[in-house]
Amino acid sequence: MELGVTKTMLAGGVLVLPVLAFITSFVFWPGALLKAYNWYWRRRLGLVVRYSHSGSYRFCYSSRGTPGGATPSMLLLHGFSATKDMWLPVVKHIPRNQHVVCVDMPGHEGTSRTCAEDYSIQGQVGRIHQFVQSIGLDKRPFHLVGTSMGGNVAGVYAARYPAHLSSVSLVCPAGLVYPTDSEFIIRLREMEKSQEEEEAIPLIPTTPQELENMLRLCCHTSLNLPRQVMRGLLDNRIPNNDFYREVFMEIVGEKSRHSLQENLHLITAPLQVIWGKEDQVLDVSGAAVLQAALPGCQVELLDNCGHSVALERPRKTANLIMDFLSAQEVTGEDAKKHS
Image (cartoon, rainbow, N blue to C red; front, side, top):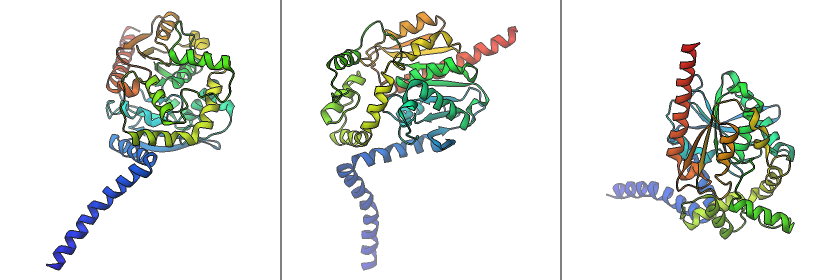
């Protein structure tokens, strides 16, 4: 009898301890819990975190599958102050046999932090090229996807290294001259006029309210996240805010602000453009700029969607990219038949 009671108590303890650990983490260390959640999600999706080096410079990335499949490998570049994990909702809807690589952009998450030169758009393009070479992704043409800041980098990469790419998808890319100012650009101009260096940058929150404002700016649909999740997001961002400010000043500086615009004439790879119609960070009018400069590009405008396309419309984004890849393969096969 006593042995049975002891076994029951032990079994109960085994169940209770993880629950207590979860509750404690959620209350006291929500940032750590969010990182654990991303680890779990990567594991479920079959993504493995790896590291590669170019000299002393370290890149952190996650990948799934192997190159050489029916479609080209896919490299995804995240936006400002995000990480490779921002692509998890999209990767969930990409076929398991598709080789995908999500890299932390220069200085972000697990990739080396060096100096401001690396954070300019041209600097980031150079580092991404090193990454591509370090993992052998340049052995056959691959498909490049970039969003926001990563879209600027992807576009300039396509201009500089056309032979490496089979095609490109730009999602709400930065780096253009937009016919219509977005809410964010209007605020940015007001900041420049005030010339107050310590004025809060809308994309670098330091308080729960500022984080809420940022999410409202980036997402058309309200996320309604629990308070502890919001706290976890903020806890994980605040230690990096000085770095984010340094990167931000580089990418909005004169050398980088219109990098994509200045390189559009050099892009020769098949191009897909995906944009949320309600984007308040980078106005959807940028899609018309791309179409005017590159008439052959395929433009997809998403209803009821803001700047965070990968978060708001992950299934649609994955389907659009995969359909575009399939279409390029068909076009390539037709070209071979007629040659």
